[in-house]
Amino acid sequence: MISSTAPPSAATATTAEEDSTTSFSSLHPDIIEAHILPRLDGITLAATSCSSTTLRHHSSQDHLWSKTCHSTWPSTSRLSSLTPPSELISAVDIHYQDKIFTKVRETETVTGWFRCSPFRIDLLEPKEVVPTPMKHPDGDDTCTAISNDMTLSWILIDPIRRLVVNLSSHKPITVQRHWLTGEVQVRFASILAADRGHVQCGIVVTCGGSEEGEMQMREISLEIEDMDGMHINGKESLGILQRAMEGKKGKGETEYKKGRGGTKYLEVKKERKERKVRTEGTLDILCVAFGVSCFVAFWSFILFR
Image (cartoon, rainbow, N blue to C red; front, side):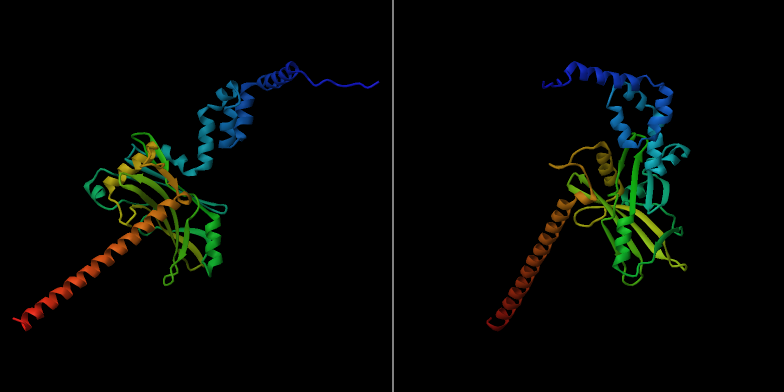
């Protein structure tokens, strides 16, 4: 006799699923909140909160997300110690291998000097240096190692409007060594939309050698420039940054792009530069032709009058 086993019915599957859900839900809330959810990272915690109504309730605790935020961006743990909110707050985290450098800096934006001058935020004081475990580069291999092992997060916060945006490309887009001074410039970038197209928000970490042979971070700055390479003043930069924080879109494209996604921006910038060179070349030819015409006309008038 041949016997066959019938597949489990839909009702049986549903009952098993309900039993597993019930068994997890039967755990004491303190166990879930104190011993399970705190062990999850941000992505897993967000996914867990979408799995059921009960887990969504448990995952919405502020202390869980604060812990996740502080572990991902250590600089955010220093924000609570700030005095009355300023116009802009920079929370910066630089990771190199297992070393972390964090700093929070406030920037005033109400003076006429800030609004009329080119926008720039310097994270370090003029004579401040930060030691690093990076070895002074002897060739391209060291620069490649820096590019692979260094990450940067520059979170810009508007505490008055409660807006925030991360302006870094996370990984460097270029690592260059100056042929004369030996300083290494590590560049991060993001592309933001403006009223007249797009602009580049560039972050430069300048490192120099020390007597011990290790590199020191001597300058960490953030600037905004347009497609022609001109630095944008503080007043216009505030409007661009506010648009980025609000997530508004530019002309036909997304407002905010990371450095690795700004290929089109670089192409447009290159086209503008080439067009400008062609225009200047045409003007030079016209000026030379006009000068030659004036010279010929002058001598014609002198010789044939």
